[in-house]
Image 1: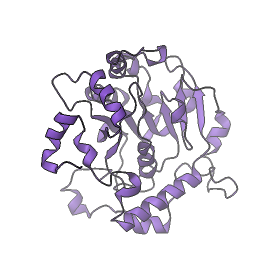
Image 2 (image 1 turned 135 degrees about the horizontal axis):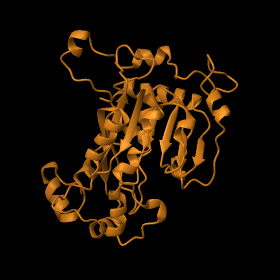
Image 3 (image 1 turned 90 degrees about the vertical axis):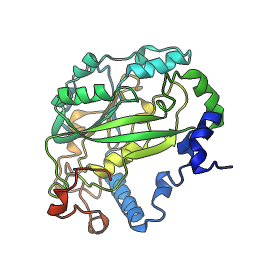
Length: 319
């Protein structure tokens, strides 16, 4: 029986079932059931992206020694660093911290020199767990990004087989709600305006909250929905993910990580994906640097408010 809205906090204390378990229509396929135009826009955007995504590229490499600058500049950079929070979760659950799960310090992460592979303009999406928001902001400052959004992953725990594991395995300290969400900070390098840079961003399509089931203890896997949000938002087709694992390999992305089985990336071929004036029907993944739009998408896509309203509103991107 679903608890009453006013009883959700007490229900959590009694059962460890989180309040967000009661949120309805949170799945992407359900979210826009009552908004047919938004639903159609998502469908059209997703089909266009899928059609023009290049085959997955990936490099097995240790990022402590790998020279990222040889790869050129990117429009989108996604990073889920091996934070100390992740290693601590394993230790609290009496699980072994393997070599590739050893945490990096903030100073080590700064040495990645992300600014050398970030084009102008470009976006960075940085997972910060629930404890490393301040570290994420400091990395943005070091790498030359300004924070523009915070995407929140709200974790449900509907799978009762995992609940006792998490109750026993996590130290919540003095905050019962600390481990039910993680943050992905979004940073911008350069300057982008919704009204004038529609060749690079399509804003106001997705929300900045992701709701999915928590992963098994010890996993750092993140919701796949974030990729979809990124791809619908930024029309730049050069996308790179660092610290990737096998489950992160994806069409339209270059993934780098020490836990990948092998390497599938030839620089000359990879660069050719973005050097054509128009998309090819024979090879639709070969085309210009930026994904083009369609009349149907433009007719459905939310537009920026008039200038007088923009001056009264803060700059936002996802909602």
